[in-house]
Image 1 (cartoon, rainbow, N blue to C red):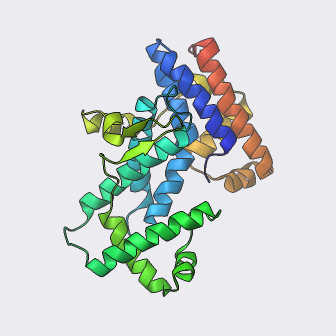
Image 2: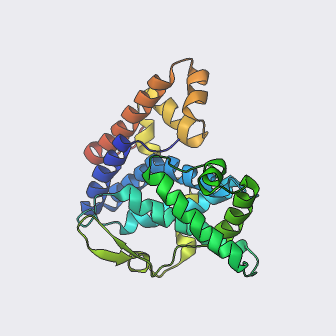
Amino acid sequence: MTITDETALQINDWLVEYKKSTDEKKKMQLKNLIVIAAMPMVKKIACSLARRATDPVDDLVQVGALGLIKAIDFFDPTISTKFKTYASYLITGEIRHYLRDKASMIKAPREIQELAFRINLVIKQLSENGIENPTNEQIAEAMALPVKKINDVIEVDRRKSTISLDQTFVNNEEDCFSLADKIPAGDYQEFLNFYEEKIMLTNAIKLLPKDYKEIVELSYYEDLNQREIADRLEISQMQVSRRLKRALAEIYKIITENDTPEKE
């Protein structure tokens, strides 16, 4: 499960409101709402990076969430409109830094380094041709190599590679920036503590209609996917998707219009 283009546009609108708000309570609630809506992207990236490793996916999701929180704080909607792309870089970078730090300091053989470079080029080419997150089998077929060879090289590269903070990116306006320009110096634990508070929008969620509240709790707090929610509630996946979208929109409305009053 990942965020849809429609959800990505919603998040962009919420980010604009978040950046211009001077009400600290409202800003915190908007930030939490954006994190909730974007967490499927974090989970997708974490699963992609962990699919060939023994690292618990839950650990990588938590680390990736730190990258998401950083992206929310330092994304500038006036410079670029593609928060999804920007956040993906920081989420991926955060997870790869974590995996790199856990890896042993063993230099990969030149053959592995060269194959890793070629594999990354093939992955990019396949993505440009419409194959997002290609499987090892698809990569092996494109390179005419055994799947086992691809597995071994990707595992080594996944452990050793990371996005450089000095790497330069270009946004839609052709302005260049590096990740180092966007990530602040500060206490890393501060982000961890924020995520570990469970990212609750308590007052706003209490004000939701019962069916919307139930969808939010099952999806984001019990971590059920749409099929599991549909089975639990005995409705269709399409109904789950629509209710979830409306629930998030309602939370945003409560935050921005009603100032989330306490529910007695």
